[in-house]
Image (cartoon, rainbow, N blue to C red):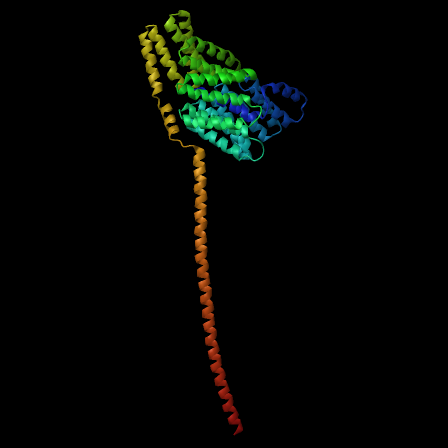
Length: 456
């Protein structure tokens, strides 16, 4: 179930960027490109086409992203350069080239920070979250998604409700993968509540219904999981969205596998594989191929079909190779476990033991343990932010009251000093007046003596 995350990552990057565009708009954008002369507008349209091709036609998507970058560099349009790094980053994530994707996104982040372009920075953070999640670095992934959500919620100009919904969906899926079911459901429902108030987003609504199905599946409520998947599948068939159908078919294959309905599981997984092959999404392909191989193995073990057994070994070996290329430890844990079952069934006990040892080595790996433990101890960043804001407000209030108290004390002291000075001045004036009166009296006496003297 590790790749459960991918559906959210894929659709959220599309939602956040698309702004009421859909795959059918590619043709009209291509026509517009032929007549456009303004390089900045051409750059925008190249990036729009690139984003619309994500998980539809990866090679063309990369090509249009690079053309957009060349146009932006030609006119030295920094915002366009940033956008043109994000678009290829999305395709590189889809193709499993995480190192190159990281380089593209770091370039975009640096430019966005320099320009103080919060909107594109939020989009970059969203993609970084998807990248980190596909590397099973979930605490970092969650941190990026919360940063993206915070920025989108802070934007005043424009309607970013869809982007906010996408962030909640991504956050929900990180919690989903790590068995924080209540948190996952909470965020999925927040996304659904937003999407229900926005017209023309049935696709996103359908995928959130499917996301809830993945939680039911983990809770072993396979009946409810399949109901959710089929509800989503019905909507997606009406919308003719092949990419969404690839995920839902993959999940149906997984759910039927859990129910030991191997024929249905194989049927749905094969449908998913045929669709995924057109998009080149390695993560989803790897997980689906693994499920297909395991379903074929279980069926072969009950029917002793050599053809089914050979297909099972081929798919499980392919899954192992792809998981090694992707560096997906959780996938490798399952690959080695089921290959051990295969070798045991074939009575090749040496290879079975070797596979089970590899399974245990990856299962006990420090990498996965540390990441999952740190996620369990990670508080909801938004709650932390809210608490910090409350603490800051309370601190400012206390500081303000403290300042007022000191101002009051200082005022009293000043009044006391002024009063003392006035009293001191008044007393000095009184003493001076008394001295003047005494001097005047003495002067009057002297004048009288002088007059008497003059008379004689």
